[in-house]
Length: 147
Image (tube, rainbow, N blue to C red; front, side, top):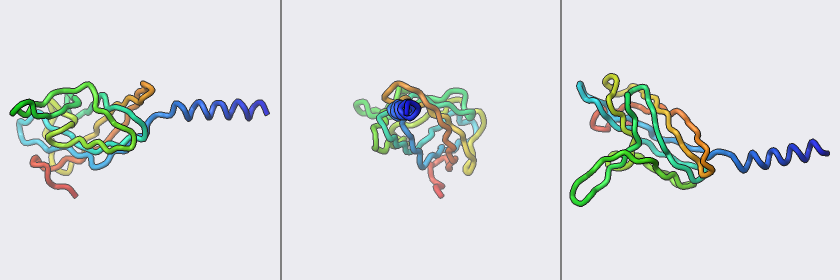
């Protein structure tokens, strides 16, 4: 009986501290042309709990940042951001002209059809960090070529 109580308490505690489950779909990278040293990674993210995307990494570039493009007055600006909110149950799209992951100082040209691994770091509402890898398909430099 005592063992059953301890097991029940342990399960309840684990359930309270479960990390948000993140679903990633439509991950892709804009291909590069010779001498191009930067490009964007785009995808859709959906979390089961409130969370935030706080960083990204990839062997395809020496610098990887989470970015936002937004209009400031009449000028489109791009800047690194500390995080992107992932509200529970809502799909957040990282897309051209908005939030995205920026690959800077690309190690080698990225050709259509290749795959780029990107490791995302997410912080849950409880402050716990989790990482997971996404495989992003390289599309043509104009962003087309979706299968």
